[in-house]
Image (cartoon, rainbow, N blue to C red):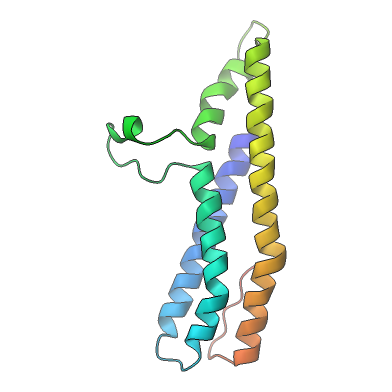
Length: 140
């Protein structure tokens, strides 16, 4: 389902971002770490942008729900039970909104796949070319 895809993608984004951050922190004294940082930055920026389109990361208190815009995950979560769990047929507006949200999710997943198929291999090749100690490769 859409919420499962969203959750799995957000979890993978967080894992990749942590992996990159931890690895770069371990290499902070390595002479060529800036080269690796320059390849990692577009990955982290893309992952952050995708994640922020999927979920609202700024909510810490109940009042924050009113301060920040609702993101895709919350919209899908609110609409899904009304579309799938009702005895009555969903309204055309519900179906139309659900299709739009599903399309938005599809676009975000394509962006994520592009990072995985393009930027991550660049990072892994840079790790190889720099011959860094204890190399860490991102999952492609």
